[in-house]
Amino acid sequence: MSVQQVDVAIIGAGSAGMAAYRGALAHTASVLVIEAGPYGTTCARVGCMPSKLLVAAADAAFAVEQAAIFGVHAGPVRIDGRRVMQRLHQERDRFVGFVSDAIDHWPAEHRLVGQARFIGPHTLQVQSADGQTTRVEAGRIVIATGSRPHLPPQWRAALGDRLIVNDDVFAWQDLPASVAVAGAGALALELAQALHRLGVRVRLYGRSARIGPLTDPGLQALTRRLIGADLPMQLDAGELQVRRDGDEVIVRTGQGPQADEQRFDCLLAATGRTPNLQSLDLAASGLPLDAKGVPLFNRQTGQIGDSAVFIAGDVDHALEVLHEAADEGRIAGDNAGRFPDIRTHPRRAPMSVVFCHPQIMMAGQSHGQLLAAGTAFAVGEVSFEDQGRSRVMAVNQGCLRVYGEQGTGRLLGAEMIGPAAEHLAHLLAWSVQRGDSVQQMLDSPFYHPVIEEGLRTALRQLQHALHLGPPPVARSLDCGPGG
Ligand SMILES: Cc1cc2nc3c(=O)[nH]c(=O)nc-3n(C[C@H](O)[C@H](O)[C@H](O)COP(=O)(O)OP(=O)(O)OC[C@H]3O[C@@H](n4cnc5c(N)ncnc54)[C@H](O)[C@@H]3O)c2cc1C
Image 1 (cartoon, rainbow, N blue to C red):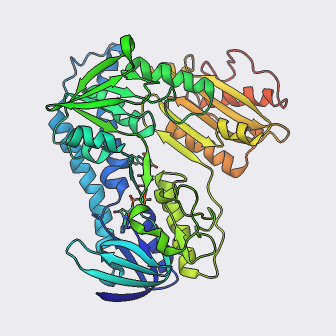
Image 2: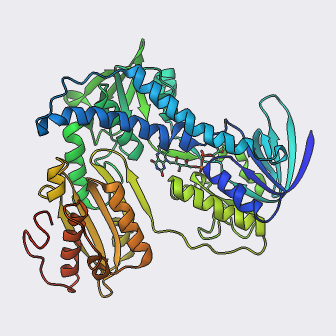
Image 3: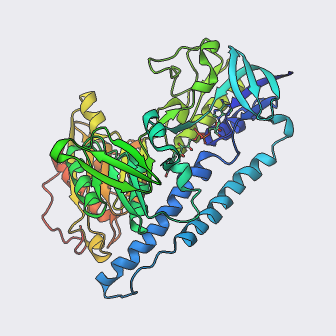
């Protein structure tokens, strides 16, 4: 066994681990990044980027189908599944290549390949695939081990290789004929709808009536209606009963006369993700853990308890999105590097997007969080059904709801399913972070005709609901039709 002594050891070379590396390097050259799997990050290899490549292909198919609305006829859509996957692989490999290239430029002494586990508060044992063992003694440690799909063990036993996860989808050479998707969260919605639009027979199964992340009850109902109008799905399906018959998967829901059985090529499990903590043997670290075994940490510093161990990215099970993983990596790396002189880092306003159609977004505090905190707030809303630019582009579906604080008139948050949600999410999160009042937002310019005019309508309503402005004029023409 070899022994390496370093100032900072980082476990995991994903987006959080890479950001932690740069953060720590600003303070010390004695940094070691330990990676058990392939380089390239979850985001580029099997996460954000390949999923958005699949969604982009689906959007292209949908646009051709929709073209007839405008009197433009492109003929029947024909999907070349091999070509869809080929482009996905080509572009994905390019993104992965950029990441691997960056890591290739790190000094060799900063990289170690193998699976790390704690054998003491400051000591890791790293086992490589070829049986080499290294003991790493580190002054400070950053845990950035990410997460993996949660798989009910009974499904694996019943279905074998016909139970798949997102990683498997992005390895396909061709599109299958049929897929059952278990789960109704962001990943399930994106993948199920994209595959459906690419001609795969898809059925999405949700355990409860909830679909997607929105917490506003009105928007939940609207999401069910809008997504359900397009995508075959069964919500409130409870526990799925699954079995294998030859090369097929049979999914059964309900009991007695209500029972329903459907056959598919495979079952895609998108039922949430589990932090990669099990392999770390945290018992040997002496770190404080919550009831689920996740280390108790400070969001502003990344520090676990008052230890010299920091945590960042999906593994902390807090905000499983890329920009938060990168931020947390930067914070944890900086503090591990400068330990014990650690610094508090302010966090950004929350923001998340689901790239389904219509898109879903949340910015700032959610409706559910505001209710739970007992905040006095008012709501403004706009439906996009009659919104000018949305109708022009035939994307006039959905609703935006904005939440403002009673008394101060500050924007607190927003939830939406509708057109251009990925862009409105940014405007709204930036305003929440700056502490903008609704009036300040209304004083900003709005071009015409744009989807953002819908936001202005919602803000005017909110201003009135906060008793800070007049009732909005119905079908206001102050900037032409489309407010
Ligand atoms: C299908 C999908 C789509 C997504 N789409 C989006 C999106 O559109 N927008 C968005 O913001 N986010 C999206 N995400 C989430 C985003 O990808 C993650 O938040 C982000 O990649 C997490 O980065 P990370 O560094 O925490 O984990 P990772 O990138 O997974 O890095 C963790 C690393 O740790 C290594 N590791 C684990 N255990 C050990 C060990 N014991 N020893 C050594 N190494 C170890 C792993 O091999 C891995 O390389 C998506 C995720 C998925 C799965």
